[in-house]
Image (tube, rainbow, N blue to C red; front, side, top):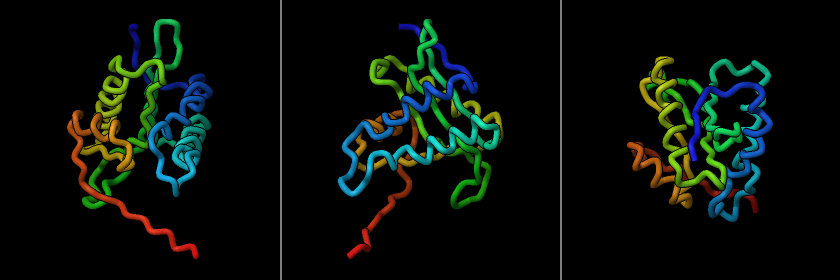
Length: 156
């Protein structure tokens, strides 16, 4: 199947939102509500759709029939430690039927290219330790697992 990666437009919003639950399509830790994994990304996307998130950009992959195969949502922000210009991959999603066709790699390459063209020196992302498939994808794509985040519930 052939596909095209292009910049997202408002008309893509509904199809992108429909793919958001795929962000929880892995072994989500029992202490987490799967909806929480994509709720803030959906809110950020909505801000972008409303023209209120100029620091964000979106790429989509569509097939020849213009069916949504996947998307990326990226925000431009200072890097956490150096404070140099950077980008953060808020979300990358490939639809279930489009896995293994290079859609994710093409979307990631487009996101990196645009981030670079907008002055970002680095791009960061978060991934759950239990999401081994995504971790392998990022490592194969040249990402370095730099930080670990720990969490402890304090409720009685």
